[in-house]
Each structure stands twice: as C-alpha cells, then as structure tokens.
Length: 356
Image (cartoon, rainbow, N blue to C red; front, side, top):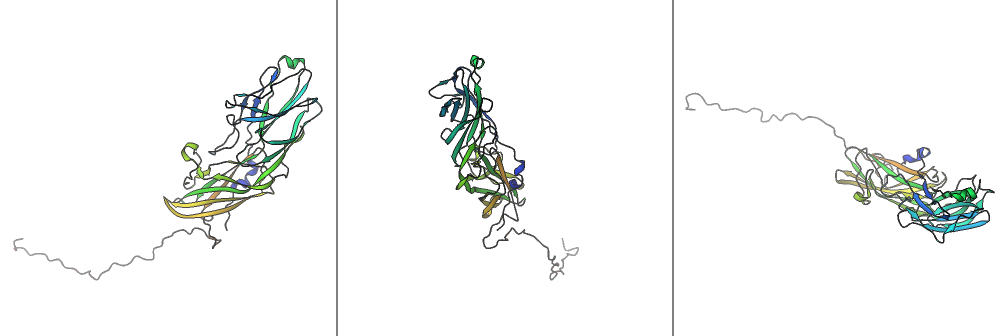
C-alpha cells in the first residue's frame, strides 16, 4: 500500500516554537495577589485548544520562604476573562523573608515532590513533578515566578510577581494539498492519530536544568483532528464540515490537538479518508493509513504535518497495492473516407420557354 509521506517530517528542524508567553502580574501592595493575565497564541486552525487570556480560568500557585512552603497548590481563579485574579485566604509580604514562586495551569493537574531548590534568592526555583493525562484538548502551562528578598527597600513598594507561563506540551495539526489534476477536487475527512501517548511525567528541576518529559510517556489515546477545511475558514462558516480542496490548493484540519512531547524514536499512526470529486460527482472514496516517524515532538513547539495527494498515491485498493489513477487518454486511429455510393447525382434543369 502506498504511503502518503508527510512533508512536515523533513521540516521538523525548521519549526519555530509556538510558546507565546503568558504573563501574570501580582499587583502592587502588601497583599500577594494576581492580575493582568496575558495569553497570546498564534494559530490558523479553526479550533485551537491552547489557553488564551480569556480561557485561562485558573492556575495553582506554589511558594516558599527560606523557612518552608507557604503556597501549596493554592488555586487562583478569574471570573472576568483574566482581567483580575483572586484566591483565599489572602497572604501578605512579610519583611525579612525571602520568597520563591511557581505556578501550574490548570489548577487541577496532579503535582508531587514540590521543592524549593537553590541556596539563596539568586538561584531559588520551585521544582516539582507533574503527572499528566492527555486528552488532546487540555493545555499544560508552567511558570517560574522567580524569587524576592522582602527587605526594607522591597517592602516600601513591593514588586509584582511576574509569572511567565510556557506551554509544556506539543501542538499538532495537518495540512493536505490537492495535486491530482485540474479536473479534480479532493475532500479529506476523519483525520486521526490513533496511538498518541496518553500519560506522562513532567520533571521541573532547578535553575540549571530544563523541564523535561524524559521517556515517561505511556499508553495510547486516539486524537481526532476532524475534517479538512479551507485555510481561511472560520468557526462560524464551517462547523467542521469538510470542504473540497481545489487543484494546487491546500486545506487544514479543523482541530489542532495537544500531544505529550516524545523522542524521535516514537512513531505515530495517522488515518484519514479522501474522496475524489470531478466537479460535484464522486469518483471514489479511499481510506488511508500513514506513519509519522523520526520526528521529535518538542516541549512548547507546534507542528504542521503536510501531505500532498496526487494521482500516484490517492487510490487505496486492498487487492492491488500498486493501484493508482490511470489517465483517460484519446487517440485518433484514422479519419474514414467519404462514402461515395451516392456520389453521382443529377439535377433537372428546366429548358427556356416552358413558362418558367
């Protein structure tokens, strides 16, 4: 069976990080509070599961002083689209202490082994182990809030705790190009990765180490990317309805999905269905299976796996592994001679004087 090779595999090293920083500021004053959340996510797919300012409803804060832990996953929430944030009970800056903060979103994520690493304000960091179950739709964010020395100068006008959230998963979508022929459109539906990793453990270490998933990802979960729509489609005009792709045009999956980062040794099975159209006439429907392999899914990166469908790979026939479209051609054998059996004909021309 022919494989549709995804162009994104070869281009993986050129992918730019999609981890736009989400900033949460603690307001000025002696109370430790949270406000002004900012989330910016660049995307072209219709449905993007990434947290945005308006959709980041809550996060959990972890905090230490030099003497021990004072915030243990305290949920901080917003009911006004991220304009302001509240938690209870309120805590205050206390002069003479040194503080370190971190946050995880969403607040419901399972966290263990929370520690404060480092020996002074200069290298304090809140580390932890995060156990995560992936459904493709739930984003995972971590923010290192940094450290503060609450001396007399600081207490005169406390600095805000600036939490810069970073994406801890990988984001994936698919694009398909019609390169069959000018006579045909294609319609791609039901795009899935059938064996994405379902669980993993994120390790957040000290200031000298990057966050890592290691080789902890296990289990399988099927991720549904939906149908392929026009690149300029919006949620109001498509509602996940597959749209025909014209010749040399591209479409992309309605949904983006989130995946647990993995090493390049992992491979993923992709399934999708293609309908070949001549105008509005269906010429055939083909169920495809492809493989993504040799790609490292990096923490905080987005991936667009692109496939080109053409006359050599669009047909799938279980009884003929080498099946492909055969062009309709025309030849001229000959031009038949004129039939001359009635060639000799006479015309009766009347003579003059017959009153004509």
